[in-house]
Every structure is written in structure tokens, then in C-alpha cells.
Length: 233
Ligand code: IPE
Ligand code: IPE
Ligand code: MG
Image (cartoon, rainbow, N blue to C red; front, side, top):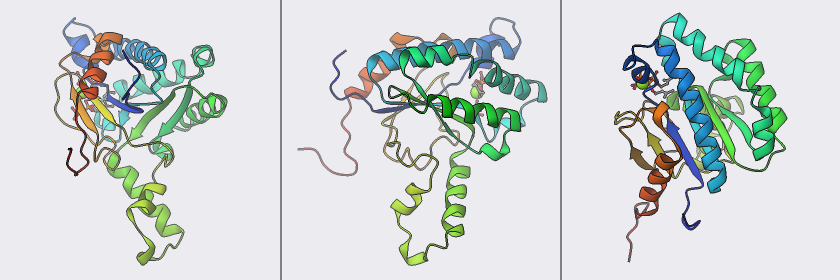
């Protein structure tokens, strides 16, 4: 694939872990294990392709509605594997970042996430942004609170003020958002940032995703005309 017109930032709504397992008469949790393997494959592929930012929708502010067992299992995976993959990050110069409501996470998980962010902050390759306990509406509400706390005058508040108080103001908006497993909705993912993102929907379940699938999504992206409200000649 040529490097021209590559998306700088790709967001992925990794969906279909539960269905993947159910189709095999396995527990939903097994689907999350396979989903994690897919995530690692896609991180490596994105890093090799020269993508700069990859945001993974890992756990939404709405996912607390699931059973205690499933929520505990997903948090357990974060705890068990996030730091354990440090050698992989080091080899590929992958930086881990975070977006979401840190205060709403179990303290040990929040600590784990902050540690891995600190330890990889010096890496200059692909940034993998973990959207964990993330909701687009929640991110906007937290931004508004930060603005209010600073006492910024109403007349001074612009779109840029809001952007500067989102979780990662230095990260460019996602150029491409991928959702797997046939669902055609955003489910509260990057609401502010996705205003002009291109969307790509795939019928494949997330645990089945591999490098070819990412390439196909990027080829689709490269063939689009982004107008941002303007007109093309
Ligand atoms: C996505 O897979 C992973 C998370 C939301 C944590 P699901 O668990 O939503 O899988 P389905 O949609 O039930 O198949
Ligand atoms: C979106 O998937 C959240 C993540 C992928 C983490 P869901 O499976 O939670 O979304 P809905 O419920 O189908 O909208
Ligand atoms: Mg789902």
C-alpha cells in the first residue's frame, strides 16, 4: 500500500466479541480473550503501516450495565495484559495513552493504566489510545467542568476552548472510524472528535479481524473525497 493519504488517526469500535463466543457455544468472556488477540494483531499492523494514532473503544461508560462477571473479566484482562505487553511496546516504540473517566475506574485499574502511560511516554511510534470507561458525552461534560472551574469568561468560550479541554487536545481528530460486527451506530464514541470522520462498517466480528481487514478499511478511506462542508473542483 502506498503511504500517500494515509489516515493519521484511526478509531476502532471493536464489537462482536460476545457473538463470536456464542457462535461457538463458548462463554462471552472467551470472546474478549480472542478480541484482545485481534487488538494486538491490529496494533502491529497499524504500527507497520505508519499510522500515528489508534484509538480502541475498550469499555464504554454504558458497559457497566453488563453482568458483574463480564465487567470484572474485562477489567481483569486490562490488569493482566496491559503492562505485561511492555516488551512489545518497547520493540515497536508504541506509546499507550488514555481517554475516558479515570475516576470511575477501580483504583487498581486506574493505577495500572497511568503506569503504562508513564512508562511508554518516551516512545515516538504509534500512539495507542485506550478508551476505557469512555463516553463521548461524558468527555464533553468533563471538558465543560474543567472550563467552568478555571472561570473562563462565557464570551471567551469557543469551539477551540472546548477542544483544548477534551482528554487529549494534541491528538488530531480521527480521520477514520471503524466499527465491526454489523452494527451501524457510534455508541457514544468520540462524539466531538468524529464530526468529520469517515466511517467504515464491517460485518466481521472483532475477534476475526486481521491485517487484511485493516488494509481494506484504509483502501476504502483513501478512495473517499473529504469535503468538510466545502466543494471539490
Ligand atoms: C465488544 O464486544 C467488546 C465490548 C463492548 C467490551 P461485545 O461484548 O459488545 O460483543 P457483542 O456485541 O455482544 O457480540
Ligand atoms: C460499544 O459496543 C462499546 C465498545 C466497543 C467498548 P457495545 O456493544 O457496548 O455497543 P451497543 O450496546 O451495541 O450500542
Ligand atoms: Mg457489542
